[in-house]
Every structure is written in structure tokens, then in C-alpha cells.
Image (cartoon, helix red, strand yellow):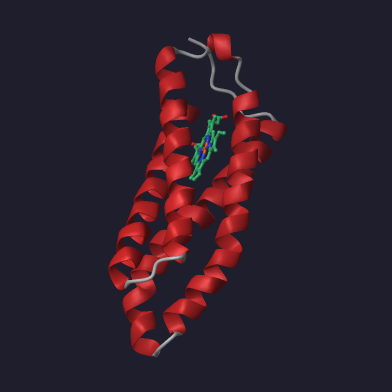
Length: 138
Ligand code: HEM
């Protein structure tokens, strides 16, 4: 039986940055969504102020996710990964792109219905990206 080893320092740094950025992109969206009723009650425009402040954190986090995601992929020898792993990676890339696109459209929404639809698609696909990432990490 092979023994379970610690990650190397560089692997630890790479994955920690990736996961920290995921906490902001994914956890931030879910937390903000949960706070919307309270923000609405706090006064007109308060939700928008919070959403704009969050965007200043979430978009840099998304950029860091893409950059560290590419770094993650670069550490795998593709000919040693299984077909299932490659398929999950491919699905993850589509879901990650959808999450960014939905978040962008959400910021441009003109009606409350558009806002709710694109916001929930963004949050759901963000959470799905996280789950697929956990499977990729094995
Ligand atoms: C919304 C964007 C993303 C989220 C929320 C996300 C989330 C995660 C999470 C939570 C992990 C698991 C870490 C662990 O269990 O230790 C992970 C791993 C991984 N992610 Fe992402 N990720 C995102 C974007 C990307 C992108 C754009 C790529 C590729 C270009 C990518 C490639 C990977 C790979 C290859 C792993 C496995 C890393 C390893 O085991 O060394 N991710 N991701």
C-alpha cells in the first residue's frame, strides 16, 4: 500500500490560492444572495451598493481562478489522466465560462426577473465549478 504524502510547498500554494479565490467567487455569491432580503429592508439602493462592492472582489477572484486553474492543469501529465478526468475538466471549463457569463449578464439585467434568473444561474454554475474541481483534485 502506498503511503499518503503531504503536498509539496508549491502544490500547496497553487491549490490554496485556487481554493481561496473559489471561496470569494462561490461563497461570496451564495452569501450575498442570502443577505439580499436583509439588504432590501435596510433601504433603497443598499443592495446595489453591496453588489457593486462585491463585484470589486469577485471579478479579481474569477481572474485568479482562471490563472491558477491553468496552472493546475499544467501540473498534470495529460497522457496520465483518465478519459473521465479529461471529460470532467472539459465540463468544468464550460461551467466556469457559463458562471462568468451569467454573472456578467446579471450585472446588466434590466428587470427584477432577469436579475433573479441570471443571478441564480451564476450562483448555481459557480457551485457546480467548485464541485467538479473537488473531483478533479481526486
Ligand atoms: C469558477 C471557477 C472555479 C472554481 C470555483 C474552481 C474550484 C476548484 C476547487 C474547489 C478545486 C478543488 C481543490 C481541492 O479539492 O483541493 C479545484 C481544483 C482544480 N481546478 Fe478549479 N475552479 C475554477 C476554475 C478552474 C479553471 C478555469 C480551471 C482550468 C483552466 C480549473 C482547473 C482545476 C484543476 C485541474 C483542479 C485540480 C487541481 C489539483 O488537484 O492539483 N479550475 N477547482
